[in-house]
Image 1 (cartoon, rainbow, N blue to C red):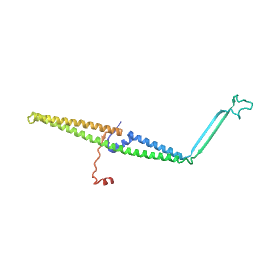
Image 2: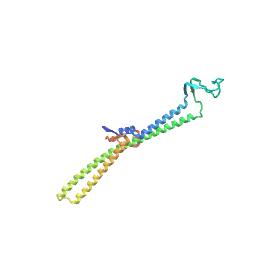
Image 3: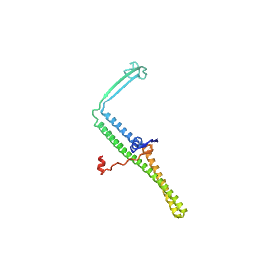
Image 4: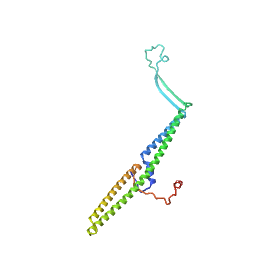
Length: 231
């Protein structure tokens, strides 16, 4: 897998997905095959030119080549030099709309392949955006979980000092230790979710996540959906 260097925006993630995703490449190849099929079907309207030629030696044995005094059981050992060529130009005038039907069918298959390609490209683009944002979100969750663990460790140290000074009880320390354990478990879960998000990103884009950049929120929110679509 390639390693991204420098900041990676959502646009970069979408571009890498459209460039490297194997599923989309399969639809691109299918669309190209459909285009070749249409070109082949369109050739049914065009004239055909057949050129042939030959040269060599032949041995004939029939009534015209056999001497009059030679019986049929005798072999004719005479060889003759052969040389011939031909050029045939033909044009299909009427085939009962067979060529036209093949062309219409191949054209419809090409249109279908293009729509499937665009549909999958849009779906993969959306998946790339979601995968990008999921990594950004999980990275923030890991940061918050690490901060939460650090705060609980600080609180636990403070509770131990208070217990030693007689200002707190053993129950308070135990309760704080339990909260720290829950915070550490949440941190492990957040790191696991981040690895899953990274794996999903790699499968989509074919690249390591790198330094993903969170998108900026619009400076001014639109008043309605219609205004958002209009802009």
